[in-house]
Length: 296
Image 1: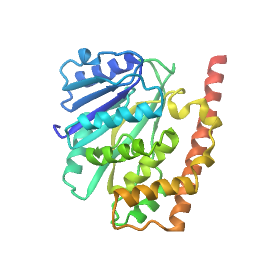
Image 2: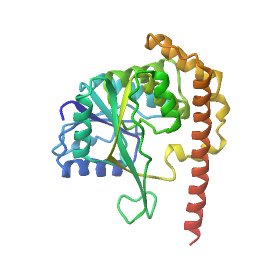
Image 3: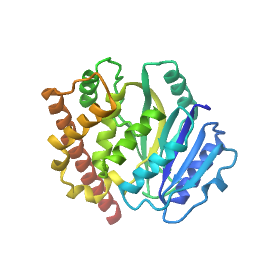
Image 4: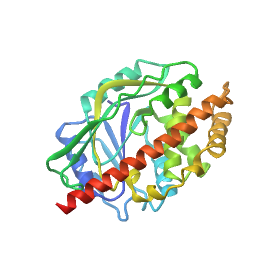
């Protein structure tokens, strides 16, 4: 457990952070915790982290994606463990299963990352801390990405897109990706999310497990469900621009590779397009459900 840090990225919602800390304290978690706070005001959450190995730092307000990304980069500079798992204050990590996944990753020298299954739930009132669960849905099981060829790993990934944001990842690789994104001004959240997921697959092999390791409370107003998504111009990150961004990463950060494959880039482009419209349709359904619920 000394090899993994939970990196809790927060902005506001202090009551959710306290619930997150209470849950880990009650379950006697032994993992290291680093809280990177981007709220409008300092929350001093370390005073509430009883019986936990917890560090807290206030980074000033996350005013935009640039300051949010800078917070991640500076946090990773201070974390000393080999592995990091980025967390949200509305999730519940399953300590024993995470420990099992960590041990599996440590025993596989060829892999840089491991993830289990995420399970999403809603409460009857969207922003409640406690209440009746109104929906419970597991994400699809991700594929193992164990091929030596990064091209083959990308092909498998694009056929079964499953994000890596909450995976257990080697810290040095996580830092390299986010530091590159910051220096190259990838300050668009949808672009950052997809860039992160794709270049992580390029960086190395990823282990996927059917073991549940994370419960996450879904919210209508979380960033990926923001109504601004309805206005988003997906065309600005498709095609040549995104391709050039990834190829630049490959040329400067990786070696001995050739990604100039038209079929590969066609599959990545289709992934971006399909992933965006799935999110957009899901948001419309959620807005309709929320409107219908309020009318009752």
